[in-house]
Image (tube, rainbow over all chains, first blue to last red; front, side, top):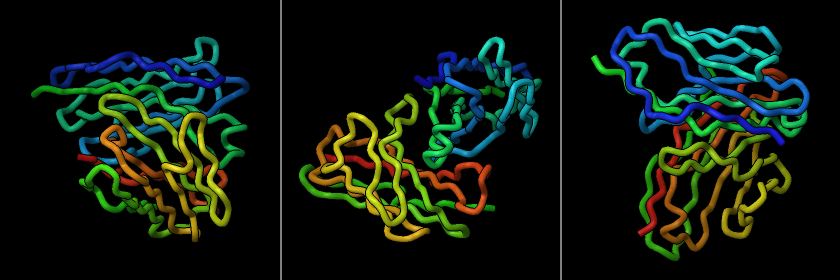
Length: 116
Length: 117
């Protein structure tokens, strides 16, 4: 079945440090991949997505590349800010799930804490 | 942009009572809405898929008689936690997809923190 695995948190970084949050997936077929961000006390916001192999999603300085050969979609940012402190979720949706309305399968989330 | 409003944001109720949570798409129509449950420091677990005008589809292990879902219109879905118990305390999040956008992303509400005492 479909699943998403993320690196465990919390991840604590100093401001301007380089960020990598690993995400790997298991899926039949060719899923679409997403990163969502959840700020404290809020719902989820779409951060970026990629719909096919070798696509790179990017937004707000974050980026992730869809790697089919390694079934990965690692999130990176070159220089994090305190305001990036949040929980980050990797997710996938394959064609079957899409035909079921587009439900997502989420990873367990990785908490990021950025210190000034 | 597309907005999903969830209400209430927080609710405290006594054990044995029922609680209703509303999820509204404010500026788009949503044929399908999803209800998730999130435990502290854990991922979102899909509870059910809510389809406008028809019965909800529940994920395995979710009690449909306990978590009643109604999707009466294209802009409103409700989740009712019946006979709530302390173990139902959690963060519940809804999401919706714009029916007009085949590749449109899911939009999430800000969640409801339920505490059952």
